[in-house]
Length: 97
Image (spheres, rainbow, N blue to C red):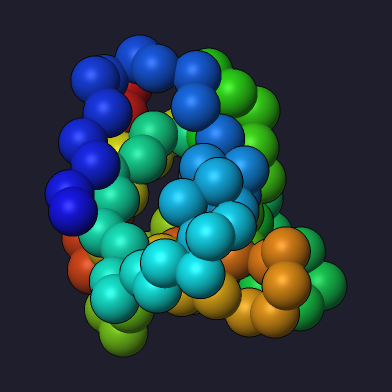
């Protein structure tokens, strides 16, 4: 199954993932193109997604430079870090003006 959401939607990734897996369905992989504001935290980076306001941990790929408080369009893979936590592993990050 492939789920593709329209740009500008307000769906939150966490609850959507839980809805899909509630009957035992396994998610093989999650790819995303997400836009939002990045923030430097004590333990790394986070991104607050534009629209739904969901905050994801952000793991920039080697060579991806980010600036705290700026808006980026990030392409990457979403991985589970426990029951509720999701991390977006970036493959590419483009600053949005």
